[in-house]
Image (cartoon, rainbow, N blue to C red; front, side, top):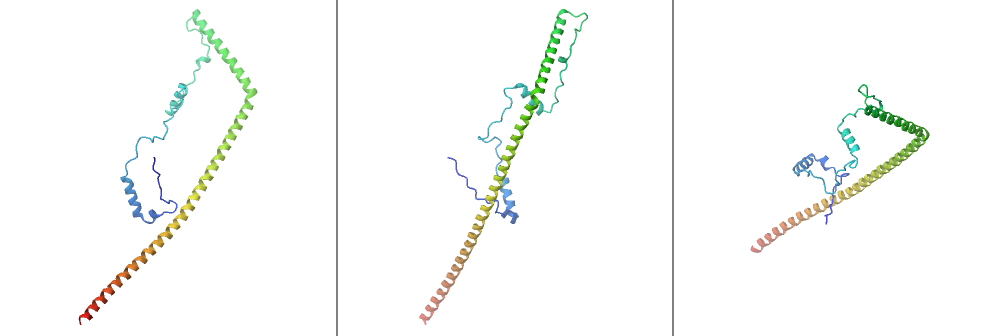
Length: 210
């Protein structure tokens, strides 16, 4: 079973280090003697998350961004219609050129269709997307404000509690000092009385011898 840690520090109340710089030097010296923290992570710390493990393209793009490499230039060859390089071109070369032209035509047709769909449905979809983002941002801001308020209240409660406990400790320490002082006074009085009793006993013995 894990041992329960007890902290007896009152950081909102204790100011001994500020009042007595020699104590601060001793604390820093003791801290310098402490062993260095382990380099390995705590067992409760989860292992590092590997991003885009199932998507090599995104993983490569992330690696490029992390290494501050520039973006590869856009390949414009697929937007061109190159003719056969030899004159006259062979049948195979012309077939490849025709296939490329069909691919370019299909690409332009799909692009035109996408643009038409975007003009028809894009504005509303964008408005809905922006609305959702705004609502999410408002919820996050509200959650953040609640956490800040809870943190402030917790710190205020801790400060008030530590101040109250600190005053109680001061009162107990003052009472302890008074009791110690009373005990010392009583011991001194007892010592004086013992000395007086010894003196009277000696005097009585001297008188008895006469």
